[in-house]
Length: 279
Image (cartoon, rainbow, N blue to C red; front, side, top):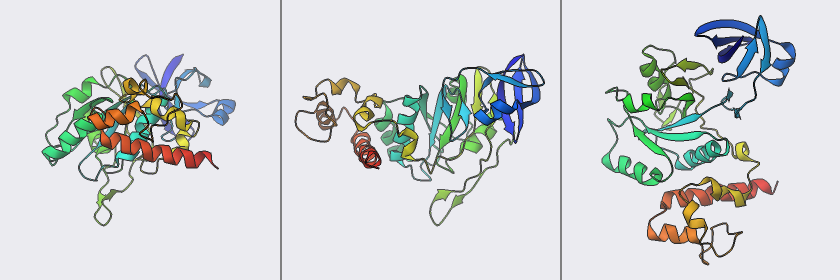
């Protein structure tokens, strides 16, 4: 039979096939190679074969991801550099990112407008609140294999619990001293919806640049869709968009067509990449 792995518990895998769930073990040789939630497999009493993957995320351990919902909130304060790293990571892996602004019931108008301004030319932005259950738009975007990701305590587990209609994830609290969330998600599991599946994931608060370590500094701007139409106006094809000498992207920032926040974050990530490549 063929099916989709929707849950892993130690060495036991739950496979969904023809709307039925089967708990099976993985074949020894395959377990050494790695079997992941999101894998499409052939199985009988054990998992015999893994179908070719579209992509594979190691943190969180999830395969064949189609969409990544990047959750931010007014509290804890968003790390926009981290969000932009996650966006680059999504684009590299052929994953469609969608920004989900949670806790809009406590968000200021300034925060909401700022977020829209930063990402309006990058990807879709959805506003929700678990308080008023404003999930209709989000539900329609759950297509294929999807995951929630973002800093801890932005409300990923609360969102999934509300969408599923029961407590399937432990909800963490916020550390008052440092305004950071305490990590609660431990496992990856896919939950089925009308047109796809959704997983909660680890917080990503410790996302390392090494996740995109194969990316050269020169390639970085190619994963900024809001930079794309301005790159053609750079005087030099090797332009890293750091200097003012006839750089199309810098001109785009000056004219207000490129977000200053996005450009500032780009320079920070570029610097990290350049330092990473030295070692």
